[in-house]
Length: 351
Image (cartoon, rainbow, N blue to C red; front, side, top):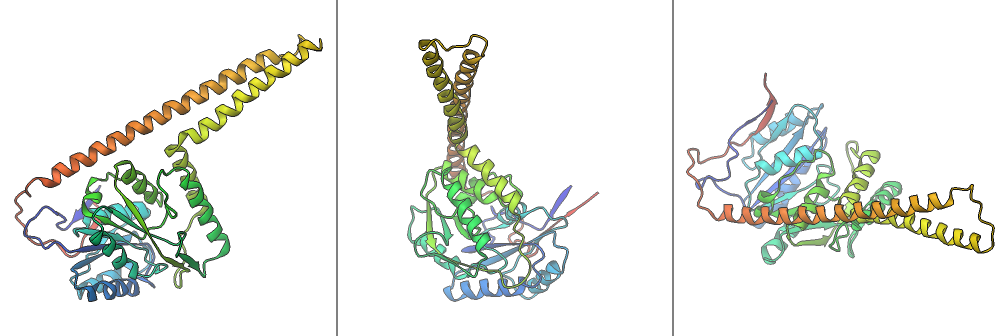
């Protein structure tokens, strides 16, 4: 059973609400933790905006947690979230989003593969453009680039994003990047479930289904300088394929159904041709195969249609959830006994 220590209640009217919350998932990042947090703080502080930095220790087996606690002791901006067992980036982000109190919530990698300066760039877009709800940092759009990244990994990343674009109705170039900034109401309307890196796709899928507007800004992706990469090709590729099929079932069912149906019709033409030249062999099961191909194709096309209808229903449900979230957020805050949130949060197992 997981326990949460510390007050994370965002409903308290007396509690100071920062302008920006920055969530940084960390797993075995003892070499990067201090530098990353310092650079994030140095990026936001000159703007005069109030902020909190929420590093999430995702069950690290090195000294990441000790480094985070040492940093938090001397800085009121840092609120540490931690739990004992590695649960994946999705779990880390979910815990961080739950703890965040800011009016805007940004997420960033711990390895500084993206410059923290993009946090303030994304914040300014949301602050100045009221019709934008989420901002993504994109190395694959015009003006963005990748520097020093291994060619094979860059190729896989680009190819994966190309495939994923087929599943998204919007013209978004980078769907898998963690560097994003959200309005508070977007975060509150989400009910997230993913534990792995597929959470980036889950978030994007749900916010688009809810009707939120997404905007990209160009960014530069650089290679990790310290520590080891946590990239897992097989798991990532599988999650991308599943996501694409789930979002656009017509891509799979439509293709397979069309192939089977056309094959059946082709067999029918072939059978007619054999009949007219008197070469049709009654012992060959061509007619049976033709019927099976055509019926199988029609059935698979029907599955694709039903799956598409389920997807539309899901979108309607998510849009209703957004409307309910807006109504809930417009209600007056409930009384709160504790005006101040705790600085350090942790989750641990209890008997």
